[in-house]
Length: 540
Image (cartoon, rainbow, N blue to C red; front, side, top):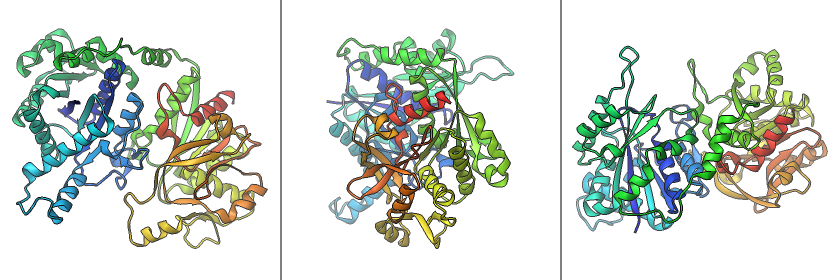
């Protein structure tokens, strides 16, 4: 029977609940247990597909095509398991299910109420995740912070679960301890207040993860123990670290895994170790030779701030590949809109070892990205295009090599005479009906690789499965002219005969994919295409 660990946050958002949850999963898995993780998002959105990346961060896509919160990506990277739609819960999904059941007389004519029926649906979904994955431990991250009305029903579900199965439920609170510069002393009062809010929801935390800029000292641990009603051994220090991959090792300094198992009356299944993780962290800390990668995007600018969360899986995939090659990754943000305004600014691309153009939607910054791709092609700069990056690489090649001067995507120019990128027929119907959420080509699709291509050399196999999130495809009507002019269709989807990878063989590294390889990269198993891209960048 599965054990359930709820992780809630206190004091403020952005303190790393997702990484903490993923790290706990890594620790438990290293001790021989099967682990899965569930993210609960308090948004009324049914999924993350229609959320703005600048506001919410990256939309992560699972193998079964679920558009979900970026924390699910952290879970996959840390516990090295493919998750599914079962691992993602939103307020919208829960209410939608309850309302649909009520409409179909699923409640037998009862009056359907927020409590208990909404929490009961949440509990049903959590238990379903346990059944489907056959996990020993199910980690449940509750989005938001305690005390908010938005996540109160999820806390109520957690309380109800503990009421019925107290021996199988554990509560962990991750809370922030500020160190005001004017005082110079770590303050525990905000955490005490967070615990109070959790108590008001009928929940007493079993373990407190004490987040702060530095490690929590003994006096603060004693104070939290006294005023928050937890054992001193259950106050786990969680200081800031340079890399999120250090977090599991830091937790184990306070023996977090041991504390969790003891509370459930369990012992580790086999000799537990984090050897692979420690080796990774050692490389992260000791790598000195840099590899400089520029990302030409548009989802990272908001006023004077740069929001890296919009591309978090890409950033992590680049890091994984750089560390594999024992290099220190240096990632720079390059504004596509700058290249639209000033062509001369493209010269700065020569300063980088490689350029990546990621996915995205909408016309803003498109021509700037196309100019950047052209510059990389002509100046032999290693280039990797992802999703929209591939589509723009095809547009650039069509215009400047094939002579199709008005080549474009129907996403940006619906009446272009050269629609080298177009929407599939089934997608046209959805767009006409204004159906945008969850209606793209999503999740795993087969890709068959062409021998002797860079892609084939990277993967070392003929068939792979990769994750997608897009509507527009390379228009097969233009494949002949593209191939005649030197563009290689290195990967094809055999079921629909759709182009998945394009390459330029006479270039050191010019490769673009319709899919999102970044979603499958793992810290100890970097994605083959990212490894090949970084290898080429190092050669430059």
